[in-house]
Length: 274
Image (cartoon, rainbow, N blue to C red; front, side, top):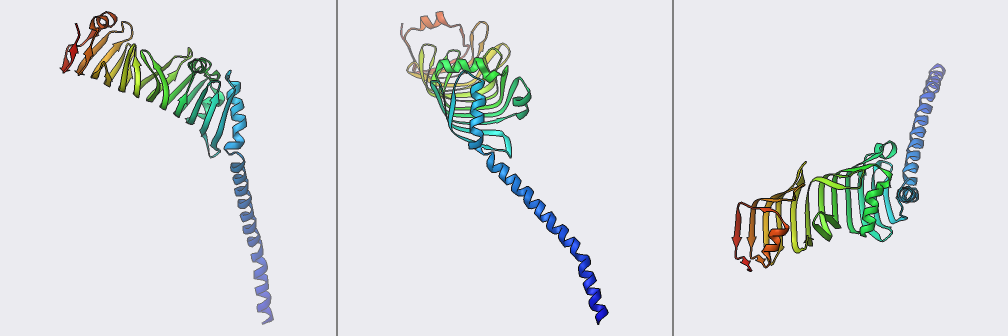
């Protein structure tokens, strides 16, 4: 009996080192987990806010402020800002997914997705942003969504429009372009003409701008069509054009001002004032 008890005691003594090893492993895992949790909790949006705004302000001539920043070290390439203000402009919300490497080690900023909502931008601030570009030579954006934004592209002008575009670029001269996109606005100006309920699907090629779908209310009626605009001559070439209840009061001035080629036109209840 005594020999059996001694054997059991020896077995228990041999098992103790494994138990300690397991306990040490658990403690190590818990320590690492707590460290990671502390890192995540510290580097939240509010702790990143001050250095971020300092970085942005140093790269522009503006003093930039914002109410809230959402950031997680788990997704260091994603950032969300709310109620941004700079100079005479303000933006309600920005969400951006960017290429982290391009920010750190490149002269060209690459953005995968950029969303902005309710933009109130002064024209002079827009020009400064395009020219300064946060000290990057170029800013490329794979996917761009702007909701309720001022938009001034060629003869199109409005203070509130929605733009959804792919392959957008602000080049080293501050010129903004995109390969394809859609534009819609409740009201806008096309040159000297007022329009309502404007919608266009636009794409850009080497020598022309292609508008695959155009729909708007103007000249007292509705205009629909497909066309291309030659970049050099500015000639308007309509593949098809439909006019409904349009009033042309001064068509001769339109003829003089624009070069229009429209082989096929559908006309419904329109008036031509001579």
